[in-house]
Length: 378
Image: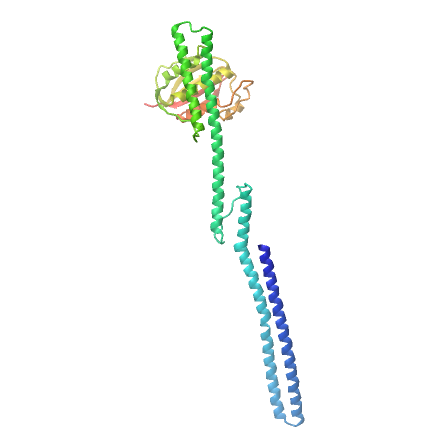
């Protein structure tokens, strides 16, 4: 379109120049011939008048001839207006083309190039909104469309990542109660239930862990049929010290590797019992898997907070891994051949923060200490 407009403008300007030139040349030729003939006739009359001694008539004729020559000169200057008008016409057409190009064609070309990039999936190139051109509103609409598509794609990508995270988290949490079930079943197989009370306890823990697996699979099912992007927590007021004792008693599974020091005080917190149980199970299983030592669990008070400590005596976590240890799917350099998904500490951090708490890791000369802090309520 731009090339066609340029061609039409150039051809029209050339036509105006050519026609004006021909008209100017022809008018000039006719006028010059007529004026020459008139001058010759007037000169002959003047000569004859002088020869006949009619000097007064000759002088009058000379004056008339001079006046005609002045008029001819004025007419000559008047004919010079034609080239000026020709130049003005050409300038007008060039200006009109320039306006059409900058006000219509160039914005249209921008939108055309923008549409081509959008069709190729490139949504990173913005289309600037120019109020001065005729396509200003369309430009704004196209760029708004690009922004909406970009946001939609980003949201879709985030939703996919959240979906993967939740599925991985639930899958990881399912492994923990299954491991406890296996431990108690092995205890039954080894006839460790030496009394009726122990047998009832083993069966009770197995039943409870089966219920926990069922609940986690229900969470997984609910997530798969909805757009849930986070695990739901239902906090309630619990006495954290006694509840932790009961949770650890179930996790211990007669292994005798958990040493719980019950404090001489009580404290109430807002916590989801099921998620808090998962938190403890993840920390204990991490210590069992990587430290392979006894695990000390105890509480301390600090102002309006209560701190739950998990302390093992293994190799700890390398200092260079500490900044990333809570990231999803991250595993330290010293994991060795141990199987894992890198979600254990990520889940611990997620659950503690959702219950208004926080988690901190600290290496010691021998072993690792995990401190989970919760605010105390009345």
